[in-house]
Image (cartoon, rainbow, N blue to C red; front, side, top):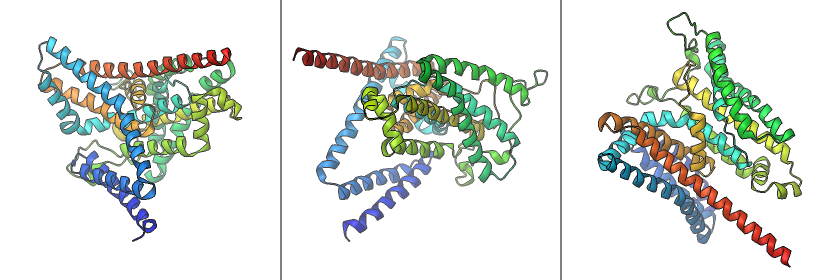
Length: 414
């Protein structure tokens, strides 16, 4: 069979095996990993047939190089965490065994539930970073998305095939609109988005308490800190209907998150909009010289980042909680920053770093229960990982500044 006819068949196999393996693995049927590995092998075969051997080798080397810094950071954090446990009188081998077993086997469903909102907030922060912006207020946009989803989930009574997409779209748009004023202030006055988005995050957080009272949280009643539940028809579908042995809380929000990550990656790498966003973030002066509007793209990037963060709130309300709690957030907006940094702002990488972050939390809970080691050791490990990753960015930034100054000095001497 000729290569031209073989390639579409191989690509279809990649998607089929990947989708089947992913779903099986998500629902704790771990043999799905073999399907995923088969899909990866078929993908490299597809690339091998599509390009020359040298190009495939370069792509593999680039992929491994991109993994180097996160792997080094995680490994160093594990070693430092082990030293801390030894000093504290704990057995690090027993602790890490419990951590890994709890996060990736026993409590795997909790890892997935933890990771799903982090995919959305991580994408939000990563997209803003691509434009040279720091959307530190993803937490606030998350709350806005959750409030709109709760309101619509209570009152929209159409068939779920209509209401669920409408709720996702409308909640995301309102969360994007919530970033309008920080974006406007950034473009018109130069006000730093770190300050403005953080201020708006706190506003949204405290507005949620008012919203809860308005939507059923009666301070005189037995449930003052929770809204009325959304309609059952507006719940995200759960995997248990197809896989009876899986945990009843697992829902399809994780698949939506992965699909959105792939979509964001497509936007950044294959569209004019994405090219302009990356150009503005990489070198605003060069982008302006090419006729790219800096202000317009900053504005669009912050609005789209707000849209993505708002989807995290929708996911939690429709998929897991089915109502809005006073303390709904587990810091998903703030943790999205760590997830984006660890993924080097790569939308596909965000999927894996979100799962890692979720697994650390789930494994830490299991470790604390079974080995009686404080869950705070997990926070220490996460902090060390983040510190090492950020240090890499600082080192790279300082190195680029020094290189640029030397280049300018040499050009001036000439």
